[in-house]
Structure formats: C-alpha cells, structure tokens
Length: 176
Ligand SMILES: [Zn+2]
Ligand SMILES: [Zn+2]
Image (cartoon, rainbow, N blue to C red; front, side, top):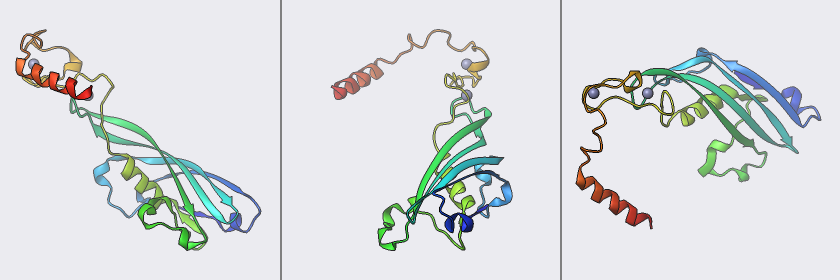
C-alpha cells in the first residue's frame, strides 16, 4: 500500500489525513509465524512542517495467539502507533535511530513496509487469554479455567517448601 503524496506536497496544505487497510498480499515478507488475521486497519496523518514531514500512524491488528499459561488458542487484538520523520537535510539523519525515519520514493510513502515492521516490533510480549487466567494444573495438566482438579485442593500452602521462604526473605532484603 503506497500513499501518493504528490498532490499534498505541491499544495499549501499542512496536514493530510488518511486511513485504510492491508491485506495479506500487501507484503513480500513471510509473516506466517505471526498468525495475523487480515485485514489490518490503520489511520494516520502526515504533517508538513515547512518541508520536513512527520508521519503518524495508528495500527490495529489481530492475531491468533497461544495463552502463555493455559496454552489455549485465542484471538488477540493489539494497537500500536508509529511516528517517523522525513528530513530534507540528510545530515539530520542519525544511523542509530533509523526506525524513526521514513523514505519517500516517487512522491509516495510505502505504508505497508512501515506498518508491517511496526507490527513485528509490537507483537512480542505476554499473551494471556484473559487477565486472570488460572493456567494448567502442574500435575494433571487440566485447564483450571474450566474448573478445579482433584490433585491438591487447597494444599498449596501446606506444601510450601520452607527453603523458598528463605529465598523470599532474601528478595525482601534486597528491596530495602
Ligand atoms: Zn489462558
Ligand atoms: Zn490437577
């Protein structure tokens, strides 16, 4: 998905709003591992700051995730945003933070490239099917969100290993 800026750049407008969606074949990258669910929605704007351009993008996407606690598959929705710049003066570019710059080629910006790389950076992190997911029983493997098992009802404290208590005390000391 390329955004054509030729009309905007030759006008006196200082802001160009846009929105759209991306389909699977809008990228050449192989992203199968991300299990994205298409389309990917985005909106944003370009500011013309007297010749330097600022690009802001809000992206919302969905993907098939596996819960880190109970291993159940679920659909996760995520939002991420991007801000980048295009400077006329090349000496302003700093190689260390190259992500914050975007290129303009033939008066257009390749939004797909920016959006997919923003998704790749933002997709990492914890995946929980719900905030209070109880996970699986470490003994029988039952999904404890679906009910309790017969393994060790209410005995987690009785079975508390005193050595862990010492460890916990150590951590407390460090925090002070
Ligand atoms: Zn879960
Ligand atoms: Zn169990």
